[in-house]
Image (tube, rainbow, N blue to C red; front, side, top):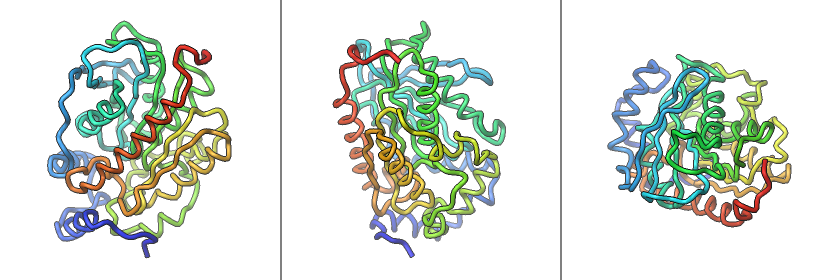
Length: 322
């Protein structure tokens, strides 16, 4: 039984999905899942908000060039932090197209440039390819390359779902071997943090709440994570010294409890942490602002928390070098 009330707009969507006849993801190929994801987006999510700057980039990666997109509400900007956003999709689906609308909201509400990273996907590139790409892209941006149209003095690593996991593991990598500019904070929205553990929410929300336990295992079957590797189970890493964190879980989500556990472990490790939960909401809500209108408030709440976290940091120019 769920341990919290399902929101009305969430229940309306779940009822529709239950009667729609769409095949569950575990009965699809990765290609089918990607096509279904792309086809459902116009009905599920809001269109991108207009921005002054939208520039497509190419970032060198360990397995080849990585597409990326810079989004900014301003046409010109002095040196400052940038948000590096890693998209969700279970490491199998998702990309720049699926997350440009969300990233436009992030850019406007934080008043910061956002760079979307199109990392390699499984099963074509299995674990830990996405993690390698995420770290490589963050380091490239931190180096202030000539090909990047701006000057960067700090990184904010952020993402949803699989992308939230990448924000965590990239924060760990850059803590241990710092980049040329510091990581100022990290944001993880409903991240998977412990491939080696078992959690009650995986059983409580195994069926009927969009992401199912069978679906979660389908993603894993294509990604093939190594549970003992800290990139698959960052919850089990030493978290001391990570940059300040904002963590948001979805209340009706099989991976909710490992997100909660990650926030608790950060606090235990002495990391400044803000924890939020979208009570009564489901996994992937950040991409369903039209289908679940109440999700707009959840996104604004988590971005407000991130903005507050950044405002409470010392000025970039006075921060110690990494």
